[in-house]
Amino acid sequence: MRLLKPFQRLLLGLILFIIGDYSYSLGRWNTGETLILHCNATLKLQDINNPTPEDHARSVGCLSYLEGVKQLLYKQESFTQERNICFPETGISNGQAARIVVNFSNEHPEKLQEHKLDLVLKAFAHAFPCE
Image 1: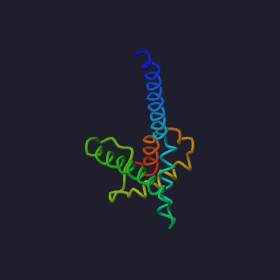
Image 2 (image 1 turned 45 degrees about the horizontal axis):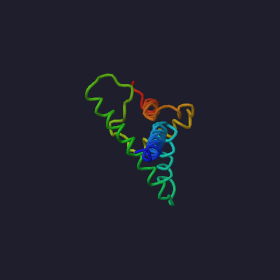
Image 3 (image 1 turned 60 degrees about the horizontal axis):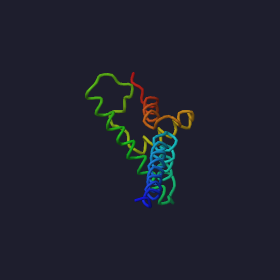
Image 4 (image 1 turned 90 degrees about the vertical axis):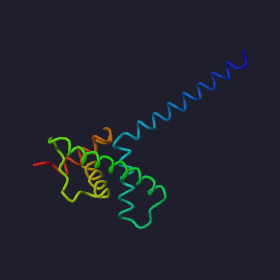
């Protein structure tokens, strides 16, 4: 039994290290800075003919996230009268959404350390204010 205690401590330390590293990377993914890294890959796919496999992977992260936010906002419209984002009746594509968010972040780099949802909502409110 005594022989297992050092091994158990080593194993516990390794598990805590892995969990800590994983949660740190998740926290970094939640910032606007990382979202913009992924959305820049989307713009590269739209504007350049030779994207890398990494560009494709990052683009999926950006486009999936923006689609989720857009769907949430569309659904919110049916439940509440209060809105500060008014999309065009025809809607916007995920590619357009990525360009809006990247352009907004270029104009407001101080927002990159905020949560990615805050950055996206501010970018959409700036691009599509309600009158």
